[in-house]
Length: 621
Ligand SMILES: Cc1cc2nc3c(=O)[nH]c(=O)nc-3n(C[C@H](O)[C@H](O)[C@H](O)COP(=O)(O)OP(=O)(O)OC[C@H]3O[C@@H](n4cnc5c(N)ncnc54)[C@H](O)[C@@H]3O)c2cc1C
Image (cartoon, rainbow, N blue to C red; front, side, top):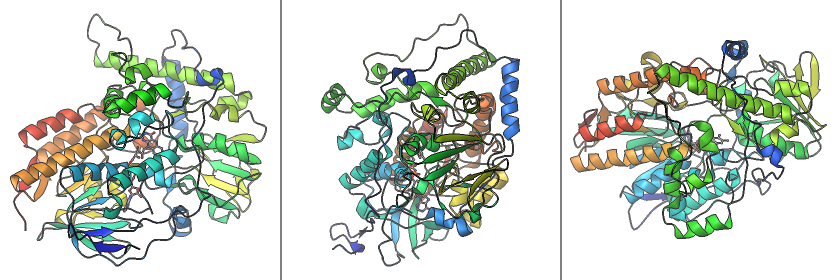
């Protein structure tokens, strides 16, 4: 058997064999299936002439204000740390602690890490080491294995490296299990595994000015040095819990959706699920198929748009098999679609390149002002939300339940969801919506959840309470020049980056898909590609110039941060609700990734041609 750490005789580099075995064969599943009832896969007709008038605006405001301050989340610490256990893999493979040096150390083995490896190795950077908390690759798709899990962006545009692996997803919205297998395929095909230290959490990353290296400490006792550190640790990595009085008292089984416990048999049980965000929307219809009783505790409803799931057709398979670069071309077309809904339910003919545009563009006699454009967007968001609300009434039979399931906020303000079986689930006699609006569940006892003095006894309680969003500066302890931490810098100066990838004072550190990393595309893979390509450019430029250190200057960083702030403020009415995207209504403008700006590319191209934002320093050896 291969040793966990050995020297590759060809390259002289250390290589690893630390991928953990699967914990149990019970961990298996699929995403949701094709729905044949056409009524469930269509939105009711667009209401004529509906506008976002003062009365409707007041309704949205009241919905939002009633919830202000209600979100109270906590990290999984102390007795709740158990919810973070890796239930998917056998225990970590024992290995020696490492104290050596590598050229590039990457944190994370999700889409970001896997794509980076492919591009870095192609560009000739091979002394690359990955540290991954989990026991295998996949990131999001390693940790999230709840029943019904699937991507929300069409898989043909979402899954990376389809052209390179020759893989064609089986469904338009592939299941998370299929996506995990594709991650394993990418790792296997491109030699990723031997570069990755699994079950290894980076705990501290500190810049050493004298040597021009980062020191990276992990929970496995490693103390490695690296010229460059790339954070590919994701945006929805750290699960969080709602803070609810008495939660520690509950005597039944409980877990968070991002660590689905397949050892607990849910068949016939009384199950409660707290939260109705994107995860819960996918899991609830599947849960309802097996449990005895299902209580859904909801504070704020999601917008449930149509899914229209379908299998990949034979025609598509045949065409793509002969069309080199089909996935890249499709992803590029997908990226041209800016509206969230269009991006998700995008026209197949357009995406397949059969027609030139995805919608008829209305011609205006004159250019609209910014205010007019905003009003138009608000009106069309309102009309779409009216359709989404009408869909609830058309499907859910109990009027009280239907009323509670209707969301009042602009489309896309909270993460939009897509499902054709979620709403009908509430017509089942054993499924109960417990409307805890606007403040949410506030009591749990030994037996279950209590709301408004009614006790809901449960055998199993599932927390679908989501993740910390964009926590890069908090969940990675990073100390740069002068011993200052990234968290301290952003807390005192506000989030300050250049392109989201550099932050001044943190040389040779690159943040993939972090705050200010560029908005616009609803497809995260697009952002990951753009960031990976940019990083390759930085590293190649440094190689050509003989530079060993790169930092950015203050003015371009300030200018970029200012730009993110301005765009965020200008587009704020479109996201006027309380959501994790805006730090539950508390985030400073421009501090998060999805600021809606389309200028990331413009800033990048200018920087790459002038090199003006960068400070390159010479050979530090
Ligand atoms: C349920 C779910 C569904 C989603 N669906 C979509 C979708 O349809 N379309 C879309 O565009 N996006 C979707 N997303 C967003 C998704 O996170 C991204 O699309 C993408 O998978 C992110 O890849 P990543 O590699 O950047 O991050 P991740 O997949 O989060 O991987 C990061 C990895 O870093 C590891 N890590 C973090 N910190 C450390 C540390 N300190 N030390 C070591 N390892 C660490 C984590 O364990 C993780 O494995 C979804 C997210 C969730 C949670």
